[in-house]
Image 1: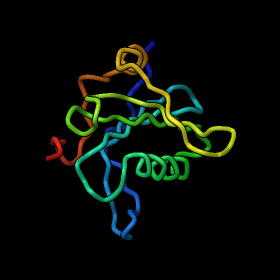
Image 2 (image 1 turned 30 degrees about the vertical axis):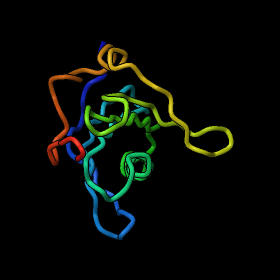
Image 3 (image 1 turned 135 degrees about the vertical axis):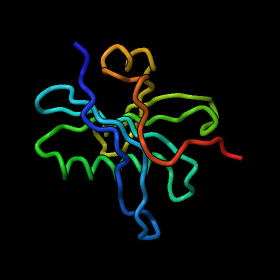
Image 4 (image 1 turned 120 degrees about the vertical axis):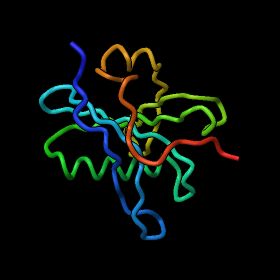
Length: 128
């Protein structure tokens, strides 16, 4: 059974300049205690997706306790150097954040509505 999509609204957090920043985000319920959020990079210049994803993790952990939160960062075509790709963010034993590449087909295989529902928010455009 595919994990159900439970939210596709943007997530808000406080940016580097103390301004509210929105990132497109889709959230799936993996089980009773675990959610997975796919955070999409945008062309907003406010901060990198890595920093945004870390802030979103803190936001989701605060809002959806006692859930375990897995964050997958998504770079659409035109927003990264290597074309569209996905990476799971995880914390290494040292406390530093690391990433593990995730195949899009792997996400499709476990997440319902993966291709049919896109995150709401500012449309994605390629960087100049």
